[in-house]
Amino acid sequence: MIAEFHLPDLGEGLTEAEVVQWLVAPGDAVTLNQTLAEVETAKAVVELPSPYEGMVSALHAEAGETVAVGAPLIDFDVEGGEAPVASSGTGQEAAAEKAQPNLVGYGAAPTTSGRPARRARRRGSSEGAAGPDTAVLEAAPHDAMPSTAVEPALERPRSTPPVRAYAKRLGVDLVLVAAEVGDRVITRADIDAYAERVGLIASGATSTPGDSVTSTQPGPGWEGRPRETRVPIRGVRKHTAAAMVRSAFTAPHVTVFHTVDVTSTMEMLGRLREDKTLAGHRIGPLGVVAKAVCLALRRAPGLNARWDEEAGEIVHYGYVDLGIAAATDRGLIVPMIRDADRMNLVELSAAVRDLAETARAGKTSPAELAGGTFSLSNIGVFGVDAGTPILPPGQSGILAIGTVRKQPWEYRGEIALRQVMTLSLSFDHRLVDGAEGATFLKDVADILEDPGRAMLLS
Image 1: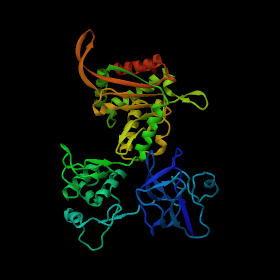
Image 2: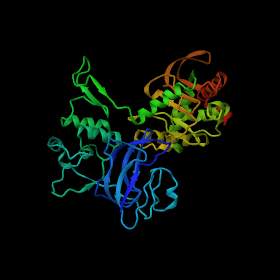
Image 3: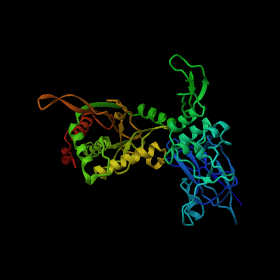
Image 4: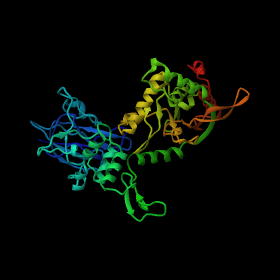
């Protein structure tokens, strides 16, 4: 019996998703909850599990194609009786039958124990291509090419979806790259190095995923680069652009700055790094700022609130879901740490680190991007001192953290070389007046200047 599976709503009312890559092909036998494909929404790359057990009979979209929610995605040949009705994203049918798929794209309840295995990739087969050309094969290390006629099956090389898409566009076989880099996640730099070595790209020439080259004549000072490229506006970039425009033209932004001596905080972090009881815990300035923000928000309720235009109300939150702006290959995203105010410094630092690693790997889930009551943007990692951050939609405050610099500073009546940082607070002037914004910024600065002052706000 043929069962048709439609693309479900992957969260937050998203209307479409792009197929990054298929992990199955027509004729493949799949088990319940086995990963079928990776799809990219406006917020995240999501692994789509199988709602059925059976055989893949047809794929309704190619890799790189955008599919609307509710549109046919894949057909299954399921055994026995009448096939369950495929998901359409409404939510009522899933409760009716145990065997029916979950309607938010996270799979059905498994009926057997054990972890379903991802379909293995074979040596010599590229990601979505017929196979590498002779030059690529000849350039591969000898120990990467089996001498037997029958080649063993391998797991898919470890890499992120954007890197796999980039390798596919250049015609690079990730299996061959994995043979060179070993058992670690393959990066874009690895792809460029391999492609340059085998002659797929010119020395020093790289390109951006999704680029469409319109001219190959280099301009002055840009040897080896195209004069013009065109990148489709889609995915995270499209969503972020729309959200920033909506925020900038809806909420009246005000930004205030404060430069603070953080020498005591940096000295405290040095002592914590030497503390053997904290071995394995990496606590950095961002973790301290995050904790200071959670404490300071208790005295600034307007900065942890939302303007509800339709209801004509201001919604104050009794918790802090802290958003952390993260720059990724796919664009800027703001995943959040739920109930950050309930975490101690060690727990919050670990959560910040895990959030950043997940974002860079392209594995942030839609649920981690939904909501948020206040946000942080660490522009200091780029060597920037200050800026005017734009509020994430629905939030009334965002704090940008500048780089820590050593510079002459007035200290105890004398000039001394101190470590200083600039804080940039943007807030929605509909909810927050200047006094409340200044009080919050001063509270955060006081904790960074003297970490012991956190005892006064805890």
